[in-house]
Image (cartoon, rainbow, N blue to C red; front, side, top):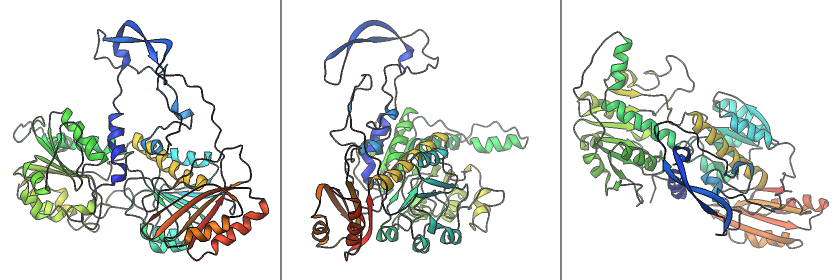
Length: 528
């Protein structure tokens, strides 16, 4: 069954949400000391305190960090859910309030043996966090604030080993055919429909994205739109700019006690449900999967149930063949009279002309749209027009309609987090061969080779998913000691990683040549 959600990351969406609430210790006064247990459960002789509210609870306080381990300074700890998923059960862990002594062998930084310096192309003004991360990893980086056309990509992409894009740059099959050196693609956003995922996989190129780093930003935008629509805020603001004083309360509502219907209960939808409950809203959600709710949200059986019982309907689904125009005239007719509609998901999942008619007929009292079937390729005046979408003028002329230029994830916090998350995934693949988190590829990883291990080579072998491949490859590796090996497949593509020892410099070329000559080989890299 096709899913509205990437189920692979559902647990992390809930985990990231639950861990985002931090107690402000400084808003309390102390009364009594008690021992702090360490990771092994024994007191360490230090003390913490019972906490009581201080006299002024309304003053913002900084959160004390004196007892905290600075996890970002130590690679054994994760600062993101995706990175956490890569830690093995034997990884170092401990209480965040415990000083930890560790004696860990440093991982060896691997390099591809059959290439020079790796070049990375970063487009669409991706966060400087990503640029710096690639440079720190030793890669050459070319940075451009604009999206590139297919023609530009075909002309220039042949010199790059990795590319980072957002939503406007299209990696088509034509582009991929010209990408003779390309090893990996990073989508610094949630969506990956701008990449020909099937073709990329067939030529051995994994694609990574950022499935949850902007979830909070999008959820906050939706919540602000719920309030703005219910108070006709944008219309009143525009009238004031024109010198019109129009103080009215008719058809302006509190959101308290209203029902929010969420279509797609993934990372964004689940965070939004918690925010909405903080405003005393009732939350319904519909998803093709049976998902445990956060808070008091209620899952409904059908989309029609949600539409008929919601005062606000908001979409959080990917663009798939089965979701294109999933909200059209029948769905708008099924909604409550005077309800509000919000789409911050994908532009093609809504039939915009049908939305225009629902607004004109007063079936809907308002709408907020952040994504569109066709969007301008660059910022600028006059770019959002009827030539782009034939209904633009009609939509922009309607009252209580909020239109924004795809800014759901456009916050400093989200872009920094996305920059870190995707650049880390690309670096792990280029440096260590890990495909954990790839959207079009088998997910394979091996524990690191330690820096004190010499004469080690890591084999990263992408091949067709056919019988007998491992037998042939292992026959080639038979003259060496196979320290560890892992293989997985996804549809027609399989990926094998193996660490072998006892490899001399003169053996490396012959080893790669033999694997490349196997019938099922797609792409083989040797790292050392």
